[in-house]
Length: 25
Image (cartoon, rainbow, N blue to C red; front, side, top):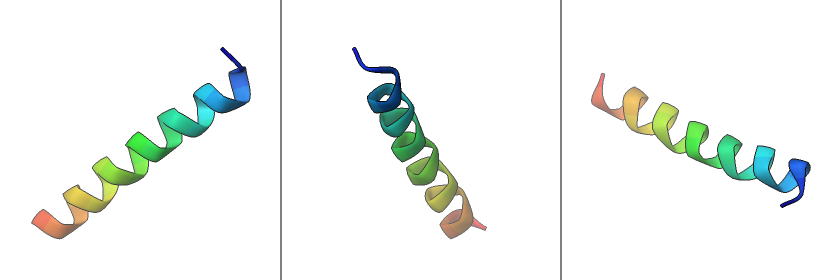
């Protein structure tokens, strides 16, 4: 598994969590 690809996937998850958190507020 490429480290950059792993960071990208983790980043996407963080963005989705952040967006859903913002929507709830």
